[in-house]
Length: 137
Image (cartoon, rainbow, N blue to C red):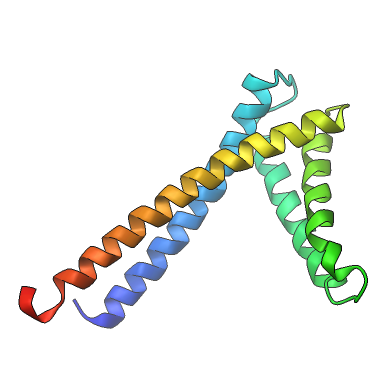
């Protein structure tokens, strides 16, 4: 297999993995909200929209306000508040603390799964690199 085809396969694999992790994050957000915290308005569609809106609003916030000298360091905190607000708004939750707990549990589970995927991809790439060394080929 040529290096160009291998690079294309790796790029497509990374794109597929990012789409999977996005949908997995939305699904975990839905499961945590509906099953663990018993939110009646939590549906998978609302979880996907809340996930998309939270990411887009945090990105816009970071892009527009990130260059300001005083507000720039607070962008991470403001992005967190925007994500919590989207969960609170789309699932129609009255308590900010419930929204924070849903966000923490859902994104912690998604982070652990993403970390496991990165470790597996690293091991596979390491194995491919070792297999292509001169003594083994």
